[in-house]
Image (cartoon, rainbow, N blue to C red):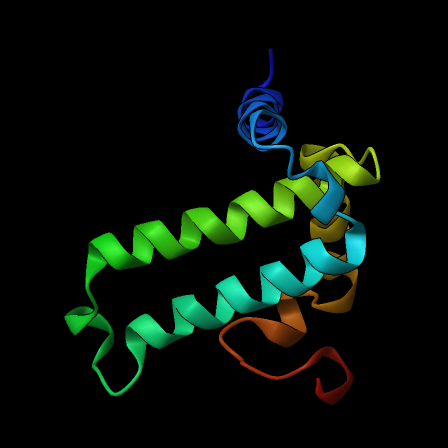
Length: 109
């Protein structure tokens, strides 16, 4: 079993045991993902990155991943494949010779 399948199965088991699937439509999962990403940002608010509580970073990042995996599952996406596909797309948008060491959006290169 792939690691992503193991994670998704554990999330589905947790969700289904609580009868929460009824709340897990794609829209609400995307909203939840955004909220959890904001909670991750909050861990860094008004601090230097190295002063953030690393345990809170792990906890909030796990929530972000959880919602992302559940959203991917709703659409039957292969998590590994969609990430690899996006990397390939970004390789085209951000060729090394134009983007190395530069923090600009692709249309500004």
